[in-house]
Length: 188
Image (cartoon, rainbow, N blue to C red; front, side, top):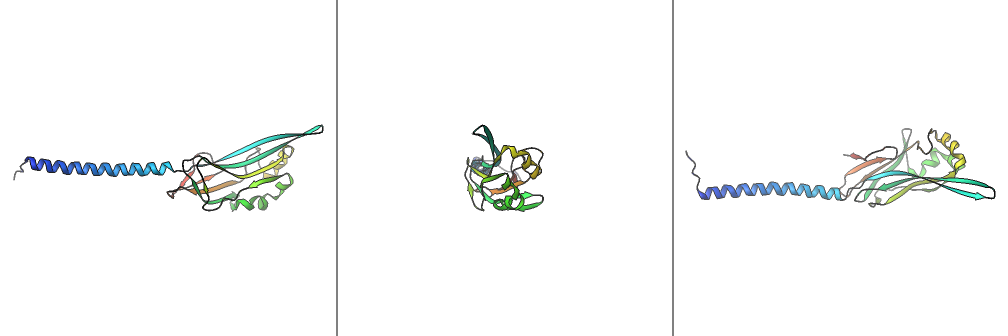
């Protein structure tokens, strides 16, 4: 049995092939646009330690105050929606707002906390914005005592780890830790 190719069959087969190619291109393009949409609102949280010193002159002596703050910044393109926040210390998890009072109450003898921010579930951190997690002021002469109390060998190291779990508008989730360098870890 021979198949005859006449002009009608060739046109019909060509139309079907063009339709199938158009469908595949449309599906591919839809995936590309969806991925672009996800990337255009992806948040990226990072931690920064900020250390400032200010010297005060009184009579014939001077003293230097240190302000140590931990800042959470959204360097991404979209808002980061906080799922949870905690401080991990020696295998135990604490709420940010009560951690210092519970675990390191003696810090009050060396300085004071100007601010402690408790991030709540559902709170949004807009793109290019920052939130100060805590700010602690103390006299520089107490640095060695504070280091010993915290059990750290290098000044300004944090013996605890702040953990933030956050999501994007597309409900993709990540977690970021204050003592870990690199990219936030994606959670499936």
